Image (cartoon, rainbow, N blue to C red):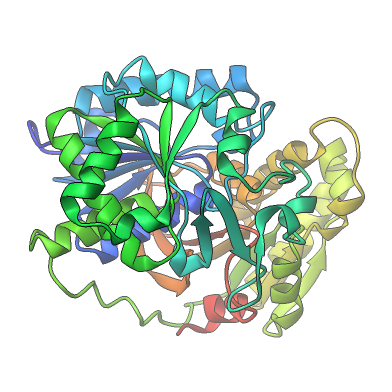
Amino acid sequence: MSEGHRPRVCFYGDDFTGATDTLATATEAGLRSLLFLRVPDRRQLEAAGKLDCLGIAGAARSMAPDEMREELEPVARFFAGLQPPVTHYKICSTFDSAPHVGNIGTALSVWRQHIANDFVPIVGGQPNLQRYCVFSNLYAAVNGGGEVFRIDRHQTMRNHPVTPMHEADMRVHLAAQGVTVAAIHAPAYAKDTAQLDGEVERIAQAHPDAVLFDVGDAAHLPLIGRQIWRRAQAQPLLAIGASSVVQALCTHWREQKELPESSTDTARIAAAEGAVFVLAGSLSPVTARQVAAATSYERITLDARRLIEGDQTYVENMLLRVAQHLNNGSHVLACTADGARLDGEHASLRLAQASGDFLQRLLPMTSVRRIGVAGGDTSSHALKALDIWGLSYLGKLSPGVALCRAHADGTREEGVELMLKGGQMGGEDLFERLANGI
């Protein structure tokens, strides 16, 4: 990045799939954007050039509080050195978090040491993903175009294997993680600008840890973006939320003629050149339907328990089997679906790490150039295992699911095309789109 250039926004994604969605959001809005997979060095910054939006992808969502602090502290120091007006702590649109894992209060405590502004907006929904926050209660669709449920009655999120959601009021949910939250509710957006400014100011003067903004409709986003940006101009601030934080800012900037009216045309994605490999570590019913619809792939089931236990004979045999199909030109979909029966402490995390190791060992055995990874934790740990330092955006396969280009230093990973998706993301034909293009 050029000396002296300051990005408008820097963001840390608490899992890799969500981070790529924010990268897509910023790029499509016209911001020069790049997602790094760790704190970049000077050479990588210079290679990136001038950036309006700089992201770092991490895995804090799957970490205990002490591990989160160790993960986030160097990122917070790095962002503080760049001095962006807005630092965005990017969380999942379903607010996946708990006191013991992915604790948002822990993250806030780290950022507070580096950002003096005590006004912390939380953007509560993301309508393009059918995530809505109304009177502080979070709602989400079961899948794309499906019925919308309150998050504590959502059939997947209430039974999430790591962070089951038993509370819909995000003020209560975040209070359990040590964050005192005030709220701006949707009726406030019908007021004129001066009245809304006054209500936000009144709440801010009470000095809550954060202010939650309802998002019941996309029309609310530019109003929220204005509130964030006008305060960020006075003093750099931290904002928390899904990609809707960047959406809110960009829609406001577009209204102010600071960004072009039309977004980048990213509708066309070519069919893959050669075989495609997909590693499905998600236990979501959405992913299960995508796996069932993936008729272009050889399907291989990986024994999750044997992966976790490090059964090297088994792992080597499966690597050879997958590599043989790929080298013969066949697309391969490898699933760890039997992970649903795993028990024991941190089983999901250990499976994600084992999946990352599997992918790292597979790549040198093949010439595969397009890869998909399903599952938030699986994606985070799979990418951490690879020798990649950055991602740029190529196009959108489905709402919330981006195809990205890998940046690496002279390794076989340079230029590899990657799709990372959370369990809830994408239509049933997503894996078919990955192989055959749009």
